[in-house]
Each structure stands twice: as C-alpha cells, then as structure tokens.
Image (cartoon, rainbow, N blue to C red):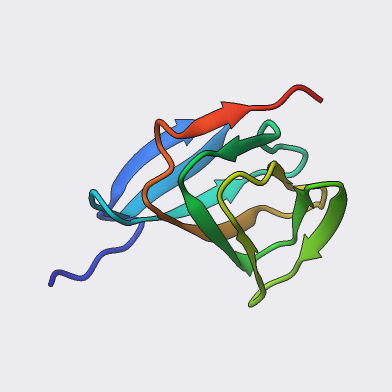
Length: 115
C-alpha cells in the first residue's frame, strides 16, 4: 500500500478557508485530515448512518455534542455516534489540525440542524 500524506492526498477547501485532505476514501471508510483556522468551524449537523471519530493533532477543538461542549486537546479524540447532532469549531488562536474517521463515509449523509 502506498504511503499517503497531505502532500499527496486529494485536497479540498470548505467553509471560510478550511482545508481537507482525503487520506483514505473508500466505499466503507473515510479518513480525512482537516485544518480549521482560528474563529472558523462547521454548522451543527448529524449523520443518519456515519459514525465518526475526531482526533486532534494540534490546536484545540471545541465540539458541541448534543447539549454539551467539550474541548479536545492534542492527542485526544471524541467519538460521535450516528444520529447525534454535533458541531466542531476552533475558538482558539492557532490553527486546529485533526483527523476525522467516518464509517461509512459521511459525504452525502449530512443533515444540517437549525440552531
């Protein structure tokens, strides 16, 4: 199996200047590395089928999970079961870099929530 990194992976841009790299993109598994600049994040949403695991590499993730807020630091992760509303953001001063593993892949399985 070939070695993959952000230098060789498929890249995309989302939100307000956030980056994503598809490290694994298969019918059953998605592993993405993402970069979220300070003050940015995603809309609150859930997935009907995909369960996800977010693992922080650097920076601090703020994860709204149901009605709670968690601060996920480097070398920590958080599991989000399918059907649970969540929102990841970067409320700190340095870039947030993390991986998100989804099974099955979450693309096309996202439902935005009204706040």
